[in-house]
Structure formats: structure tokens, C-alpha cells
Image 1 (spheres, rainbow, N blue to C red):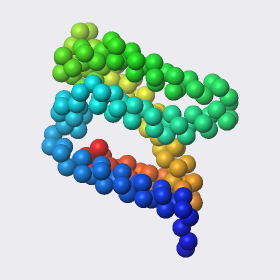
Image 2 (image 1 turned 60 degrees about the vertical axis):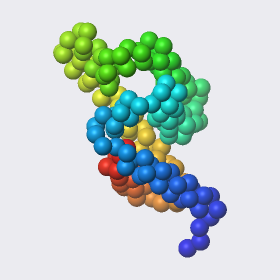
Image 3 (image 1 turned 90 degrees about the vertical axis):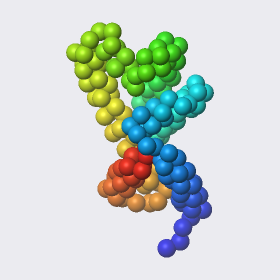
Length: 170
């Protein structure tokens, strides 16, 4: 089987990214290291992590596909994500660090009670599940395009790779 230059570059970049992720994953010793990097990052580093999480397949592949299907309305997700990050940075970041909490729901729970924290966490979790589904769709599209594999094999590959990344440090 002959490998195209694009496929080779994809595999090479993925291998380099994986090696870096595994190397960084060895520094994780606790749940605090996993979820908030041990609170050792400065504001610029935190910004890069958040942008890396948001500027993923959903904001790139998904937005392009949706724009092709429905037009300019597709940019709503990317616009909403950007505005949300701006509000997080301007209104919540200092308070979250000061309170030493991991999530906005946890922060709100300190002020409005445990029931409100559960309510907020539930809606946040639902949003994350929707976002993860969109990330899977984007990962499948990339894997199918780069490797020429079936949708089912792309889904299995994406699931395996994402699971391994989480197991080995996130």
C-alpha cells in the first residue's frame, strides 16, 4: 500500500503530538495536576490551554461543514465560545483562582448553595457531552480524509485514541 505525502505528514505530526502529550502526562501525579495543572500556569499559559480546547475540530471542521450546509449562521458556536472566554477571563478568572475552585459551577456553589452547584454542573455536563459528540464527528472526518478509512473504523480509532490520551495524562 502506498502512502500519500499528506497521509505521511498527518501520521508524523500525530506521532510528534502523541510523544509530547505522553511526555507531559508523566508530570501528572494527582487529580489537581490533571484538572488545573497544579495551579502552576500563568494567565498566558491558561489562555493557551483554553484556546487549544476550544479551537479544536468543532470550531474548525464543524464550523466549515455547517457553513457549507446552512451558511453564515455556522459562526455562532465560534463567536459564542470566544465571547464566553472573554467573559470568563474578565469576570471569573481572578475569582476562580482566589477561591481555588476547578469549575464555575463549584464557584457558584460557594455562593448560592450546593443545590445550585448541582443544577449548574448538570447543565455544564450536558453541554460537554454535546461538545464531545461534535469533537468525535470532527475527529472522524479528519481520520477518514487523512487515512481513507470507513466511518466505523474512524469512530473506533477516535474513541481508542481519546481514551488513551486521557489514561496517559490528558
